[in-house]
Image (tube, chains in turn red, orange):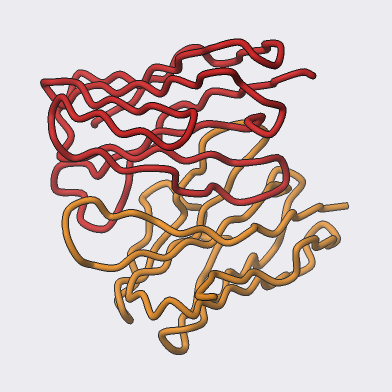
Length: 112
Length: 114
């Protein structure tokens, strides 16, 4: 079974601080996705990374896929209260057809 | 805008009283999923449809059933809800193209069991 472990589980920071969330596995994934879920809403896809070593930027968010495609990170610069939510990484398991393996999740709270 | 819609957003049912949650999509995706999510945890896949083919997860209780009458609609039936079934239920869709299997989620239905 392919697992995705996220760290930290919970992060509480002040507005303006920087942070990094990690998503790690012992297995290779063909791609990884990051979702953000705001309280009371469904997850929203932020980005998909598919190439080892790939870096993608989405405004203040920077996503990186590890060279070996076993890990990914999400870095947020100058966090804002609107960044508050549950961040989930996810990837298609080998032979899992249409399914995704979801990470354990990181809950981020950004206070004004 | 193309989207995934879930109704109702909030549902209260009594212990043991059957309940149906609905999901519709305008994305014309051929794969539809139902997830259960409990507080701050990752979504747990219950089952999914690939077109009309139903795929149940091994650990999904028999109490949970699903129907997909056409491409656009999918229903989650909970035959005899227990207190432990109180959760957020998420519907998602995906195209069966490429390897990424990106999923598009609805806003969810929060189920309360009294």
